[in-house]
Amino acid sequence: MKKPSNCSNLTIDPGCTALLMIDMEKAFVEPGAALCIRGAKATVPACANAADAARRAEVPVIWVKRIYKADGSDMEIPRRKELFARGCFGVLAPESTGINSIEEPDGLHREPGETVIIKPRYSAFFRTDLDRILRSRGITTVLLAGTTTPNCIRTTCYDAISLDYRVIILEPCCSSQTAEIQISNIHDMERAGAEILRDSIFPELE
Image (cartoon, rainbow, N blue to C red):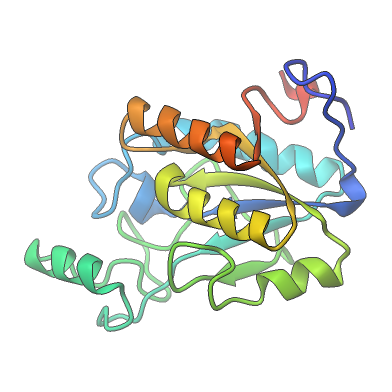
């Protein structure tokens, strides 16, 4: 795998690397959706490019998703209260379709056979089998993409670092509500030990 042009001293071994695509679901991505992150829609092409390139390099793509019970009873309490107060019900429910659904946004697709992790809270590692799955495959490096940078990306990053994974954030594939939030959280993760790729992880796509 080629080195990214902005990190000449960075090498990535495809054999021990996985791409985690986090919360790229219509309910978070589509404008007007109940949980829309304003910067998410613009990252769809970059996320699709990263997923396609990972597949070509035989880097596993792992889809980390939120799916709540249809009645919202297993949501975080603050989120449930806020959504219900707005009259938003059935958000991210199993088998949901449409703007508030668990579906991947148009332009981003999951290939048959790719692993799906359902996380109950922000971190992809919290009460999931992700750590066991990664270790069983000999994965020591995780590439993080998706939304939202200050919540799910950041908590996954810190848990991965705590579990001794090498963490690489694909900045063009991550999103926040504002540019200021994005920048400050990227800087915080970098200071905590994550590596930040500000261009494509796979330069041949550029």
